[in-house]
Amino acid sequence: MKRILYSLLAMVILLSLTLAMAVPAMATVVPQTIYVHNTSWAIDNTQWHFIINQIDNKVDAPSSIHVVWSDGSTSDPPLDKFTGKVAHYVDTAHLNLFPKWDSFLKLYLVSAQINCSYGNFNISHGPGPGTPTPEMPAVALLGFGVAGIAAFVYFQRRKSVTTV
Image (cartoon, rainbow, N blue to C red; front, side, top):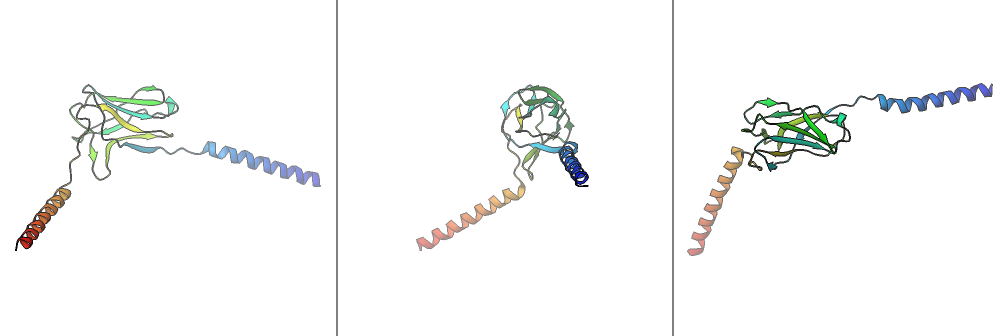
């Protein structure tokens, strides 16, 4: 009787270990959306060149990326090449535009769906200027104007008090 119980216990333990190892392999990988964050790039007036680096295998690289351009149009440049753990994406049809800047999120609206770990997603090079200045919100400009007027009034009052 003890022998049967030990055999059953051994089978339960073996089955538990087998399931514990199999469950992570069966887990679904949820893609994540990644965005370009860099705000400067090398100048190249012949193409927009985007890269995602530190991807271990070509099969893990997204087949395309999604770009929202400054005029509101979109494009989905396909994977151009994969070299040394770097996925390259090229767009030559929008050389007169910039990727759209989201001033609230502080990023360019260039995205990709990826299922693996990666390093950085960047604009490698594109048409100049290489450091576009995002438009400053009107509220910030108003704040600078009010602060400037307040400083002027303060120093004018201070000046008139010290001369009396």
